[in-house]
Image 1: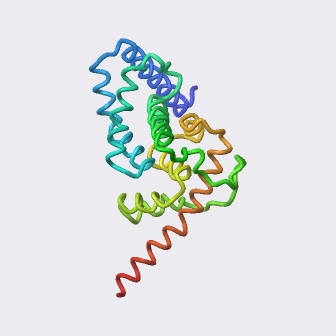
Image 2 (image 1 turned 90 degrees about the vertical axis):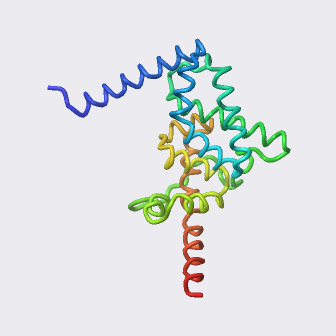
Image 3 (image 1 turned 30 degrees about the vertical axis):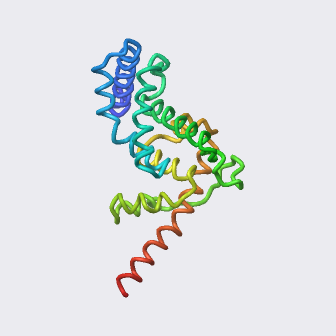
Amino acid sequence: MRNPAIAISMEQAEQSQRENAAIVCGLKSQDPELLDHLIELYQHRLLRYLLFLTGKREVAEDLFQETWMRVLLRGGQYNGKARFDTWLFAIARNLVIDLSRKRTMASLDEMSDTSVDGRAVEFAIDGPSPLEEFQLREDRAEVAEVLMKLEPNYREVLVLRFHEELSLEEIANVTRAPLSTVKSRLYRGLAALKPEIERLRGCRTAEAMG
């Protein structure tokens, strides 16, 4: 007798493959209805990702439009082997890096902590992560405020992991970084998040008492 959980998992995988195949066909034929559907489905997630990467709404909105133009023009490059959202985020990330280079700014990879050598930094995380714990207590605007204080590479991995719920392997595909580097950035980002959370709470307490 087949395990029901395995059967459900197989059905979900088959459904995902069918959806990817439909997207592949639609993008190759430049189906306008499919593009409208994809924009409606992913617009909020894509804009949020770009806002966290750039820190500026005007820039994020410009790159948002350009990302969809790239999807329209280069849709034939999507082969359906990976989830569409990981391909979409990879396009957006490349546009951010291109813009940064044009403005003689450091790329996302160059802005990372130089002490990170690609090896995963392991430490115990008991219970919910600091980001998950903070989200349970505070609204999204305050979470965003704390995240924007982190190094860009740490911020990006935290957003992809906890906001977009991508797996570590999918994050590695988006960022084109080794899995060990993704793990390192995730752990270091969580560690850097703790003092920022405490600092924000301390400021609130002081304001309330004052």
